[in-house]
Length: 182
Image (cartoon, rainbow, N blue to C red):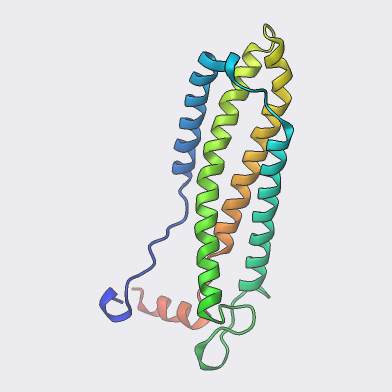
């Protein structure tokens, strides 16, 4: 199948684990450097920042569950009359556009979650290393751990939403793919 016959192929690829790792490590390294230099000027961490991140993670997890339930109502996508998807499938261009928007949101949230995870992790490591000699660092440590967990939950929920937005191939597409392979 060439691009000339059916138009361009989609170019949104799943988020690579290496991308998340590099973004997280960069966030951690930058935050470690900034915390070592400017901790005295930084405001103390607040628990409600983590609550917002957990709420976003719950929202993305709900979107992932709902999208997965919509696309795979009984484990597979079925074709209705005229080759269109039956209930539970992609019924209209608006529905397909919503799934594409969710996939883009998931990719952005996964990368942002990894960046903030790295930042919170770097800050938490710095706080743990200095909690014995700085009272403020010891006070900020629980919120740092909570923020790190919230960012991990956000990244995981975003990756689940991204995975849930994949439209499974229909049975007739699977058969044609297997018959064209050598």
